[in-house]
Length: 291
Image 1 (spheres, rainbow, N blue to C red):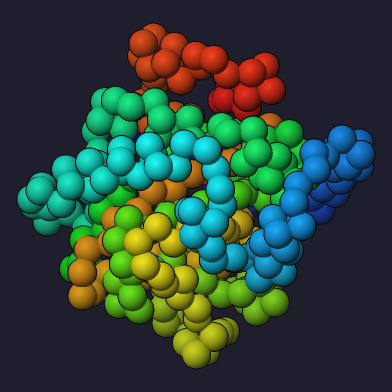
Image 2 (image 1 turned 30 degrees about the vertical axis):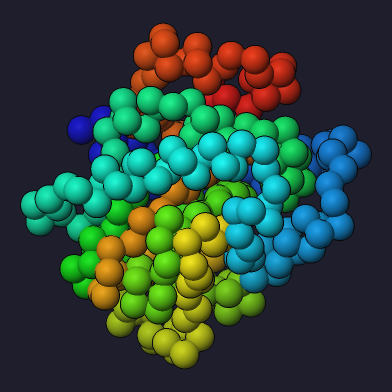
């Protein structure tokens, strides 16, 4: 019930921001002021990383690999994810279209959660968002190949913030019918949002086809350990229905520290989990943890 109320509150908030001009101007003005004040404080990043961020800025998505990102702890992370994938694969879906590990499984090894707190990665995300960031951890999924279109398998945009940065990593080979992220590139997505008068919620395939031909719908496919960098707040997108095999993935998420939408944790951390995540982190890394 709490999650339902939270979603309803956040959707209403987004509607007010989008539909009431004085509120729109106030929110946008405050956001632009924060961006200007922080611009000279953005950390340095490599030219190769800048090129990836330019792709995300231009189209909403850039495709790389987890190894190419070069984040320390990646080998250990792969081991943790391999175990979680095997655990999910062994479960009977019992009619569910998507499965997730239990909270205790996800936090059993802090290396999974802490990967997204590497300072080099935080610097990359800060450069994209333009502001100090908050990191929300890792979410592991098994999308069952049942061909259904429901929930996040429908078209939508994320409503957490002006910009949201996500890294989705495929844990198995993902082909065109394997449940890949499907999206409308920004140059096409922006006018589609206007034509749909979209603010929040889900859009059906039929509604989308009326404003964007299916030939313009792009899928981010790739072999295991493909890393899809995306801003789901600025493109219409969905998890395409898995049809020929289940899709396994992990998603890491960041927003600014002043998001439009509040994001309460699915389940609070225990004292032990919190201590293991925080152990040895720098003040800058600790500042990126959710309040």
